[in-house]
Length: 126
Length: 432
Image (cartoon, rainbow over all chains, first blue to last red; front, side, top):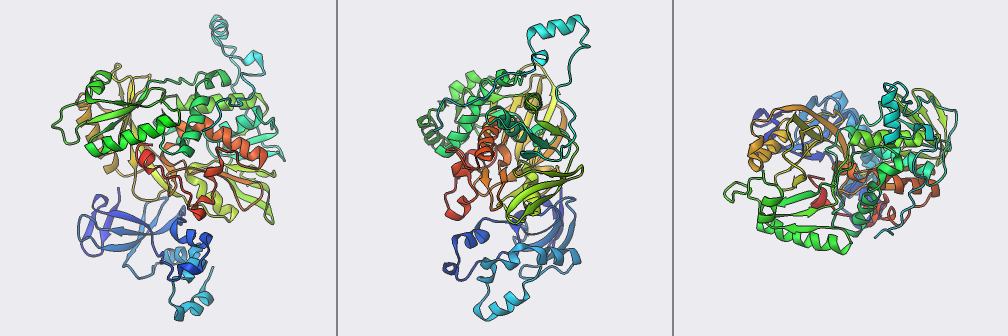
C-alpha cells in the first residue's frame, strides 16, 4: 500500500486518495483543427511506462485537492510530489516529462494559446 | 454472431505414442509411471521462423496451436520470458462465461465458449472444464432492471442466460446470506448455466503440448529485448538468446504490451494495472457454482482441491510490480463475508497480483499495426482467461491471412479514432 504525502495535509494512507491517471494532458483549444487520429491521442492514448510515471492524485477523503506525483510503476516508489500546473523538478521526473511522446503531439500543440505556439514547437524535444 | 461451424483444425495428437487415455494411464500404472514422455521439447531458437508469437501464456500458446492446426503454419515459435503460464494465465480466477452485452463481444466470447466445449478432446488434455454455472447477483432495484435488459440482449444473441429470483438463488446457493437487512441485500441475479471454470495451468500445458506435437518450438526463459524492422516491415526480434529472423510477429504479452509497443515505436491505448486474487485453505465442498457481484466487487468459486478462490477489482494506479494494495482484497473479503457468513473464520493461504492490460472501453485489441507483420492481441484487461481459445483462434486467423475476420474486425486499433468503441464496462469493469 502506498503512503502518499498530501502537500496540504501531510502523509496519509493511499485509501484516502483517488488516482487521476496521466498528468500534463492539456485539452486542445482548437480541436476542429485536429484529425480524428490526433484527437484520439488526447482522448484515449495514455502513457503507460514501466518506470517513472507522472500522474495526478486527489486527496478525495481529505482536503479534496489535486496534485501531481512522479512514481515508479515498477517499485511503487514515489520520487516527487508537486502542485498542479507545475512541472517536475527531480531529474527522473523531468526526464519522464520530456521523454513523453505527448510533448510532440499535435493535440498538445493545439492546446497552447496561439501566442505560445511557435515557442512550443521549437522547444519540442526528445 | 459467429457461425456455429468453427474450423477446429486437427484434433488430438499426431504422435499416437503420446496420446493420453484411460488405457495409457493403466499401461503406465503397470509400469510404475516410469514411461511417461516429456509433454513438450525444450526447444532452442532456430535462426528463422515463418512467424513468432511473443508471450507463452494461454492466449499466445492458443494462437500458436491454431496457427499450426488450422493454418498449417508449423515453422513457428513461441517466445516466453519466464515459464509457460507463469503470468496472468496462472494468476486469474479461472472463470469462463460468454454473457456480454454487445454483439461484437457476444461473437468473440461465445466463439471461445464453443471452443472450450470440446477443447479437452481437441488437445487430448484434461483441462478440467466444468460448466458449473456463473451467477451474477444484483443488490438494488436499479441493478436488477439493468440486468434484465442485459439478459434479453444476451439471449437475442443466442447465449443462454436466465434471471433468478431471490427464492431461486436461495435454492441454487444455500450458503448465501439472503437476509434483506444486510448492507447490500441480494435482490436477484442472472445465471449462465454453460459458464464455469477450467484449470488454468492445464490450459497452457494442453496448448503447449499439442502445439509442440505439430512442430511448434516453445522457447522458455527467453526475453525479447528489441524488434528488428526495415522501414515499416518487421524483419526479426532480438532476444536474450540472440536474433531470430521472422516476417510476422504476434505480441500477446498482456500487461507488458506497452513495453513491446514502445520497442516497435508505436502506441497502444492501454493502462497496466494490478489485479489481485487469493485462495483460502481447502475445505469440504460448499459451493458448486461461481458467484459474481459487480456492485460489491467480488467473485468467488471453489476449486477442485477445495480452496475458495476469490478475486477483486483492479487497483487504482498503474503498475508493473505484480502486486497491489491491501485495501482492495480487504474490501472484497468484507463483501464475501457478508454474503457468505460461513467463510468468516476461513484462513487465506495465498494472495497475489497480476498486471492486466486495461483498455479505455474494457474490450480487447486484436489488430494489425502500422508496421507490416506486427500484430497485437492485448487489452483483455481483467477478463482474458475466459476468451483464451477464441482469442487464439481469431488471432491465428489474423496473422495467417493478414486480414481480420468478421469476429476480429471490430477489435482493430482504429476504433479509438473512429469512435466505434465496444463499451463493456458494465460487463467487465470490475468482475470480468
